[in-house]
Image (cartoon, rainbow, N blue to C red; front, side, top):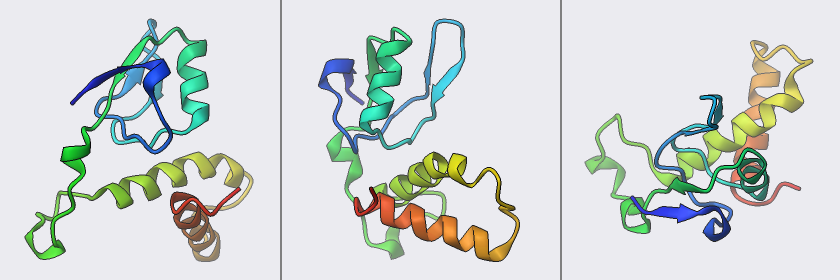
Length: 116
């Protein structure tokens, strides 16, 4: 798991550890896919470096050989996109099946890089 300076981070890199500010406030969770906004937030809070998942660790094995607890990079990107989009759905009832499905579709599209 390489440690990179904030200036070296690029969108779509995946965090290997959570990122907290000096007061312990959680800024980003382990497994989150980075965007330019994350880098800006890290700089704002004085974060100098973070641990990212090494490219070698992102090798995706055939699904039949993966344990149920493992998740591939695509799943992590969708989950990170869902968390980013969740704030847009605050006024909506996320327990409603249609709204939940709409959030899932938006997250998948954003994770593929097609969302604006």
